[in-house]
Image (cartoon, rainbow, N blue to C red; front, top):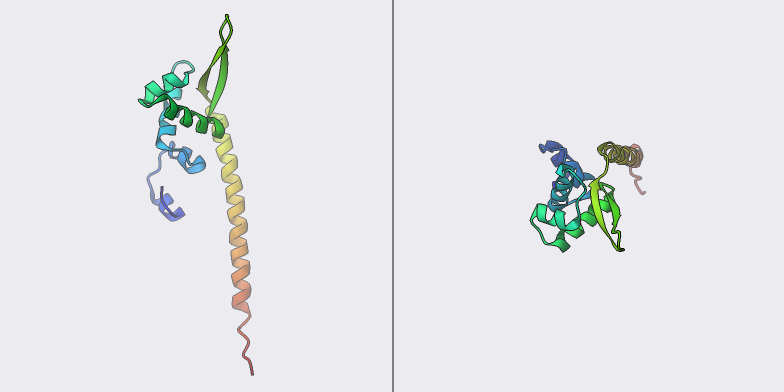
Amino acid sequence: MPDSMSEQLQQDMQCEGLLECFHGLKELDKECFRALVTAEEPLTVDEIAEAVDRERSTAYRAVQRLLQTGFIQKEQINYDQGGYYHVYRPTDPSKIAGEMQRMLNDWYAKMGQLIQAFETKYENETESPPQIES
């Protein structure tokens, strides 16, 4: 990940880069998300692990990060004889995009406030010349 905003703007970013940029997701998280998006039906953690060729526990941690960010949803499936298991599906892309747009708007407003504070702080310092002691 680039260190500065100017480096980020010079990069050739793909739309999946937004997952990393907005939420700090790792490459494995993106692979798991892609596996869920391309699946014809919801997947279990075991199926996700198989799709990305990783251990179940590793895939589970990625799934948890995706759940926390709201990129995927968990559904409980109950067995007739008792017990249950979970399957995961991607969240509607328009909801994800809407949330990223909201985060971007919040970030933009905050950066605007910081830029204004910067200008005010340093404008005031340059307008008043240093006092010469006599």
